[in-house]
Length: 356
Image (cartoon, rainbow, N blue to C red; front, side):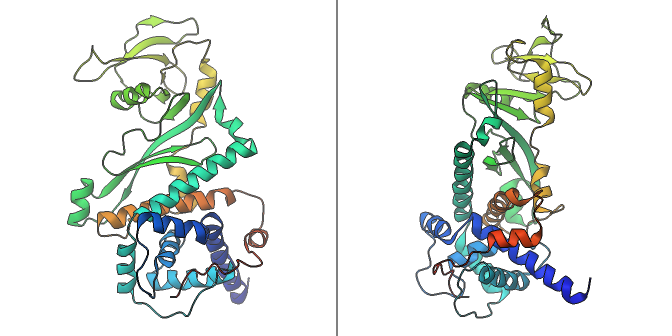
């Protein structure tokens, strides 16, 4: 491939990536999130809030690039996607940093939840939600992870270390349903009755909270877990109890343990007839995992850029937004040019992003 052809391909790839963001988060949705968070600028700025929303999202598309390079790619991509831009100045890195601070984290949080709600509604309308159910229960995966942050005093104090914990609830198809960020992220987000939660954690606090919310759970038992064999069942599984360290009698939780070649599974579904062991094993093997976030974003281990907790939260909610935007396009058979043709509109009717 010639240098010119390679450059043209790279430019198209950048523009398609921005097109995915605009498709998932059109200017009207961005404006609504800005107004809901109360961060609309009160005077004309070279970096208005709407521009900074797209810029913060684009940071996850061009992770190795500096602010100036990200802004240049964003500008080219928005123009390609048919989003008009005003006269462009050349803001400094310091100006961009200040504009990110003015934006804050709540806009990104609102964008994520709006997109998650829309994706779930789309699943229901299209009939894909049928694949998210098993024996009358809605299936969800609850997966934990952590992202490294800059080890500034503010971040260390807020997060208790140089990493921020995350808990993500997702559908089997990988649509994010709810997210917990930072201290308290281990608490189960968005759990409700008639749900079966596949998890990578078997611990009393999480399971008791989920059971109290009416959700059922299934998870892999850690080696050496204290799960006493109380009563054998006809399918070879046995009843047990999940006990807390401080109160082993009063608040223990009845569970069923299934031994298998890949290790023991634990579930709150106690009746073999209602929940056959082989089906539970298949569900657990196919659950969505936290690592899928970075696989979809094609990002390796990262350290967030932000020096303060609000900036960290803004980056993380932007990461979840970009995952939701990119996920439908990953793994398809369409070529780059075909995806570009689908994404590029003939016109966007004056949806001005603002003036750089």
